[in-house]
Image 1: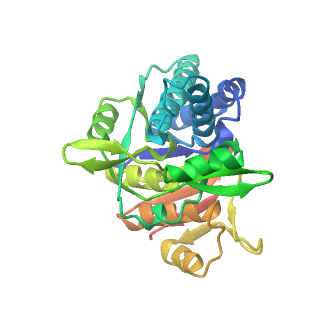
Image 2: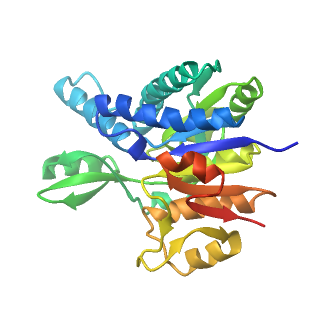
Image 3: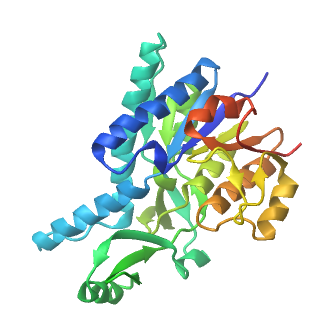
Length: 308
């Protein structure tokens, strides 16, 4: 029997920068997902939370500054908030689109925690800028707390780590919902990064790269496809000289090792695609534009990574 289980990873272009933009843009994502439902795929949706988690963190920081009886919200809490409100918009948009097509299929959002390694080298070399521009005094206070800051313009920005995902704690819930015929929204923003401390899970000051979590999620549910939807029709090398169409995983690894992809944009997508494809048999990763999702899954469009 053909495996038609798929993870769809939505990029930040699927949401926009404001509440109204997000509500408008998720309708396009819902259309793409509904097209896949009509092709009988079992679907898990994961998504970016780039602007949203920064907005939440900024708002919570300002709130704490205005009322000193409140503390600044940790990044793990901001990640959880972003999963909830993005999931809310997505699941309602998908539900509406499906019902408009005469399809009844429940949609559920799972607040998802992802284990990271406290010794991941990413904690020594943070790369993700978060929050608003700070004054020198505010930046010094952040450094006193042990946080990293970098100069930006006339001010400073906080910068946090982006460790690799190790495990997904709610994977059994995701699988059970899939088996029950539901569409599942999970591991939004790469998941809430947590570390194990005995029986407790402690939030980490980090943002996990969502593409790596999408690959991990796809592997753990035994998916046949990982569909990474972004702003580009196909991946190109950093020098712009090569556009990647259908490529074998071994050839993709060679290009990665030779440093042909931008480390902050295209590299995580290619690396995640290769990781997923290489970890099992008969797997395919597709990277393409949101509005090309249906053509991408049929291998008519996009960058397509295969292991055979």
